Length: 323
Image (cartoon, rainbow, N blue to C red; front, side):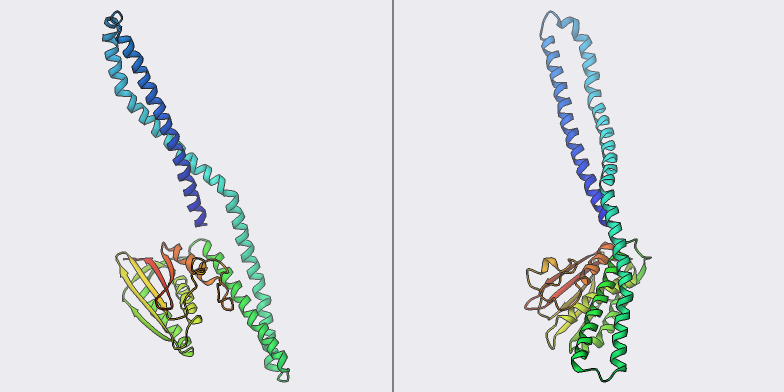
């Protein structure tokens, strides 16, 4: 729901800007009216016959009016501006409420549907695995069919799990605590080492010690696993993956680079879009980077993916440091 808070603030700012413009026009009109009134008074004073009668009275009145006019106008502007700001915030909330309710229902549907789909998918995968293990006389062509069903079933299960993760991340943040990001990065690197060796990928790391952030440990670990998993999926034989972290003022920068084929230029602007898989459509659900971006931004951080020269991909994650 953070997106709705941002949208509400943007709408409020637009309403306030409009109110400011109205006040600006009103002030111009008021000052113009004042100048016009002074002009008429000056015309009266230029009349030699009427001047003696009005001079003493007008001098006093004009001094009082001139000194009080700007002050009263500023108080009036401040009152209207504060009222307009409050009304703008209220109106923006009323405007977004139906949309917010609709999105809430969509999230509930996604969560319920994902939960209901996961159970039958698990049953199907278990049944096929049981058949393959118990019946050794299955013809080869049926073994291929069962293997394809298993592969697609696992892919669907991953999509369902990712959808549930997106819904969970859009809800209220989990309990946060001060965590040692350096240790967490090292743990994730060690966890991925066996997969890297299996694929003959060299996994290097340069991690600065004692870097702390305030976040949910499991969510940050999920982000790192998503990026490293992507790097291991799209790789060149005998390739390398480099993981590094460092502190830059009040920011911790985590960089994960690889020597894979890189990302096509037309795909780069869409890598964080849901279900977008670009030219590598045979792998992944297209939700991993969406989840990673959602988590990082929840902790006031940023994530950027770009191509490196001469080839490969670089993912840069910035998170605010916790002293």
